[in-house]
Every structure is written in structure tokens, then in C-alpha cells.
Image (cartoon, rainbow, N blue to C red; front, top):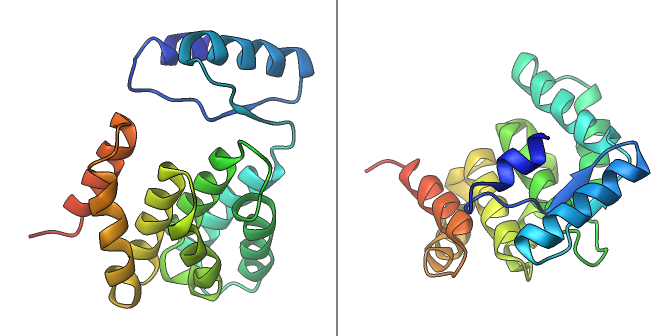
Length: 171
């Protein structure tokens, strides 16, 4: 299926397998474990990610919409604050979604900033990228060292994301 095709590329990672069907989740976990030699996190509930996608769309249509407050809170509670072992995919996804909201995510910026110290490099880079999108003038100094350090890391995808974030800052 699609997951097999994506994992054919060595630079593609799969930190989370999402589905509503337990058998498909188990098959996805087995495939990632076989091809990447690590077990991905699993998510059976798509609502936080779907809510996050709707939140991003709403933030672009009306950054002052009252519904954003609830959506921002849901993403923070269900994705950013997910402390389960191996849940880095949820935290990185949450940070990216909040970053895509831009300044509309200012109320939850402290929750994103906490992720700059996360043990997982992908989460740290996602948080740094998000902070640069939410309020670059306020958090650029905190984000830049995280991105610079990520450039030295062993994982290609994380290095590419950090380089892309730094390149987006301009000359």
C-alpha cells in the first residue's frame, strides 16, 4: 500500500501509524519495525489531528475566531502534552500544526516553547519551526540554537527540516 511505497525511500520516517482498524495498525507497525528497525507510535483516534487541520484552516480564514481557543487547547492537551513512550510523532505533529496557525497560536506559545528541550530531535526542530512561524521576533533567539544543533545530528530528515527552517529565515 501507500506506507510500503513511502518507506521505499530511506529518508522517509514513519513515527506514527494511524487508522481506525486495529488490524491495519498492527500491520503498519510491523512494516515500519521491519523496514526501519523501530516501533512507531500508534493512534486510533484521528480527532486531534483532524481538529488541528481544521484549526489551521480557521486560523487562516479568521485568526480571531472564538473557536480557535478550544482547538488550540485540544491540540496542546492531546498532541503536545502526549508523554507516552514513543509519542514524539504526536508532539512534533502538534507543534507543526500550531506553527501553521502563525500568530493565532500566540496564546499557546509557552507550551510550544517547552518542546525546545524535548529529548527527541524531531520534536525540538518542529517546536523551533513553530515558534519562528508564531512569533519570530520573540522566540527567534531560542529557536536558532536548536536548529543549528539539529544540523549536526545523525538523522537526515531532521537535518533537512532544520536546514529548511533556517533557509526560510532569509539572508
